[in-house]
Amino acid sequence: MQRFIARRVLSGSGQFPRWFSHAAQKEASLHDNNGVVVPKIPPFDYSPPPYDGPSADEILAKRKQYLSPSMFYFYQKPLNVVDGKMQYLFDENGRRYLDAFGGIATVCCGHCHPDVVDAIVNQTKRLQHSTIVYLNRAISDFAEALTSKLPGNLKVVFFTNSGTEANELALMIARLYTGCHDIISLRNAYHGNAAGTMGATAQCNWKFNVVQSGVHHALNPDPYRGVFGSDGEKYARDVQDLIEFGTSGNVAAFISEAIQGIGGIVELAPGYLPAAYSSIKKAGGLCIADEVQSGFARTGSHFWGFETQGVVPDIVTMAKGIGNGIPLGAVVTTPEISEVLTRRSYFNTFGGNPVCTAAGLAVLNVIEKEKLQENAFIVGSYLKERLAALKDKYEVVGDVRGRGLMIGVELVTDRQLKTPAKTETLHVMDQMKDLGVLIGKGGYYGNVFRITPPLCFTKEDADFLVDAMDYSLAKL
Image (cartoon, rainbow, N blue to C red; front, side, top):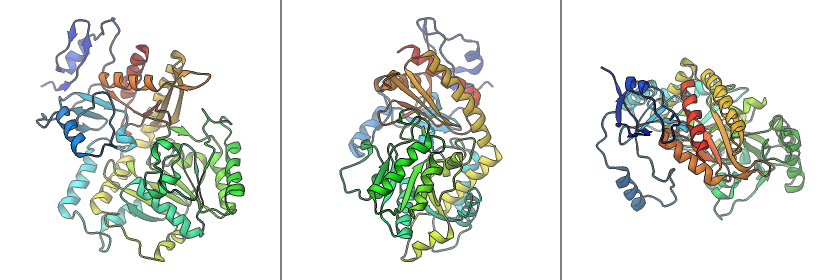
């Protein structure tokens, strides 16, 4: 029996029925009121069970009453997501959407990947929680597998619950190990929203007026908006200047993302990290690589983002893709550096939870078994090439950047002045959602599309995404 997939599309004659078969979908020539072909979502052999829960309006009303008002949502009419399978999400009406945001670069294997689900369910049935004061193989097996993916002597793992917590711990370790307080971060960076990480974060959008001491923000090596273009070594001289004119001459650490995620998918200028790391080392500091978004094969060319610049950090922090959506983070460092936490008792009740670490191990196995890094490279390169063609077609597209399945598309109203097109960005996002494509946004000005889908994304998905963006940009 032909499976049926939920879709809502408009044609010149009105609205198609919500449910119709792949066969009918293939035969139907879908056009909008102007006779333009409407992009079609690729076929997918899965239908979610019927949803009988509260409506989006009911959930939104309850959310406004009971949840923090600081929590925001995308789209003029928020989406009620009730089901997910691999690279697709489904709303309350059963309509399918291509998820090109991946829960903010978090779902790497695919929504509800059976191997990850089985690992979680099987571990939960056996033992849900014990804490690290007892032995459990799930924690140690995952730590062994995780460190095997890292270069050099990065062999000791501290598990956390999030990327913010991982970065907080990394900064504390660096300060303890070096005996210094000063941290150097990058402008436009985002490393978390707790006490220490908010200081390292360098966008006022994400910073409250609280004490944030000892952090210096260097020029951002942004090839698109930066003063030195793609010359990474020129940007790195500012790190040396900060050491000489803003500190005692010694620092605790330098922390950076290899590709700034919330900052708008900004890939650091080539040659930047080797030069910056050299200055930090001479000042006695440690180098911290924040891999919360760019790690776990997302860049395609490498497993970790920092590897794209040919450096080996002293500390690596990670989260998001590590558990495919399970709350899990980690700090990995060397045996020597890790000893600083033995000076007092360091403990984390949920860090290394057996269910979370079982999920983490399953993620690593899926990435390898299904060659998701190779897929991220092949599909990501194809997607970036197709998106770059839109830059030639539309003046509003100022830049297309990133690598693998971590891609940014920046919209501007003036290419020479690079004036952010914030309103246009929101409009196109809503249009694409109506077509069945979910993307994120970021950048200081909120004018960058963030494309970070599950790594099982296909070329057909890439075509649908670009066609939907093309269709939406044409209507600006």
